[in-house]
Length: 302
Image (cartoon, rainbow, N blue to C red):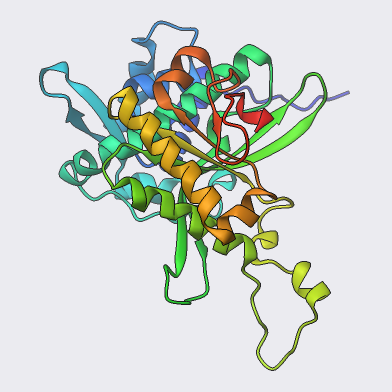
């Protein structure tokens, strides 16, 4: 009787695959962030044994951030992009590649801040034994909108998928907006209008008149989501007073704009400070709802 040999992959090979996929997904990752994603319970130096061969093979390169701190942020080379182009876990990801260390450095602040938020959810999920993995956060997700005098597309900073296990199994999705206070508070709040437009957008087929019932069942977002994702604003980069005022402006937009007010009756909306997520966890009462009572709560209770 013959038996089929079982092929065992080396642990470092598996982690190398994970690291390459994560760099492709997020486009730019600091060494410490890769360590927290794929091997958090090992000494930090271990991650260099994973990244070193990828660099030697010409699949990744890096830029150095933070002056003397020497923080490295890694991104794919053209060869690395080609290597992962047909990986099933990255299907549908066609982000423009980063072309140089200078280009990487210019986008590092926003990209790595988004990853900080992702890591807060990841650490919380591990504590709660929920189902949420490093690839469940997808940055820079674009949806088309009708050109009605406003923006013709919505680019969410990220979309994530999360499954809570206890006390019962529930699936969650969320759009994430990262605010580093680099834009005006009014411009930030206007993003709520764009999300409300996406919620209401119903593509019209040429030459066909649709009934109200048919339109309600063919919203554009239903091509991608069984339920419209909640919208979470994560703020950082300023004093607590400034961030509190910006959250108040988001609440004011929700109350004053008719389209957003109606949107808020159907989709949970919330805002929180990034440092609170990192210190207390996203499931802690650190989120301010953008509609109704302002009492803070966990993101799943919005």
